Image 1 (cartoon, rainbow, N blue to C red):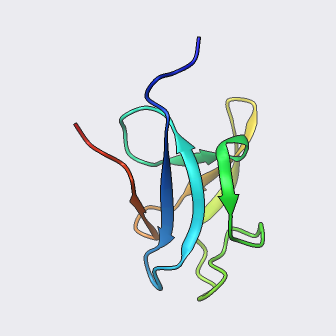
Image 2 (cartoon, rainbow, N blue to C red; image 1 turned 135 degrees about the vertical axis):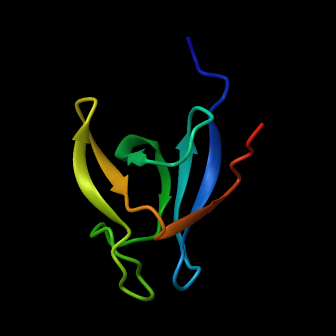
Image 3 (cartoon, rainbow, N blue to C red; image 1 turned 60 degrees about the vertical axis):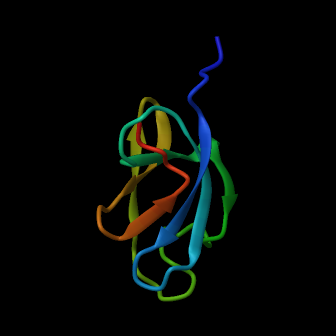
Length: 84
């Protein structure tokens, strides 16, 4: 059964405000990890650093048997996450 609460959010670098990802997020909680198969538009070089300022914003992790990007809190901000 498909989840109805999946939406596309934009993830930006907190230091220079450049777009890093467009990501299909599920659930109502905060952004903790990004599963690689849900990243729609990746603007990084794949090294988990901002392409403009070079700041590291995440780390590679294995979560739920899949490769994921574990977000370093405070390094990114999001748009498109409605909190109800």
